[in-house]
Length: 147
Image (cartoon, rainbow, N blue to C red; front, side):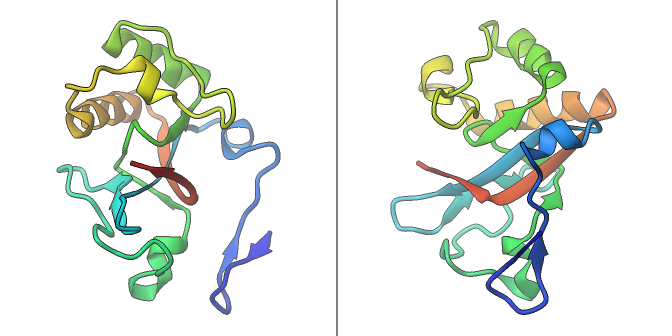
């Protein structure tokens, strides 16, 4: 456990990571940060609407929810780690092998996906398939990706 910047809020620090400790979870997604240092995506509603869009990356949002790990309907493929089971789902969808980024272990979307890909649509379909298989999707705001 570690304290967050806000009194009374804590973070569970899984060792080595959340996926290894929670077999019911197949995907852990993170926060996308735009050039303006504001949230550009990462966690979405079931309809594909981004939560916390436009919130400065250092702000915690209403009731500090934007700084808390939480279950998600959908996370963005550009900032995620997945279990072996979810790797197989993604490989089937994109037709390419899942490549983890050498530094972070996250999905290396820049080397795997074409620039013309609709990331939100791919994320939506991928997360739907993961949930259909009975797995959970978790959003971790400590995981960030600059886009």
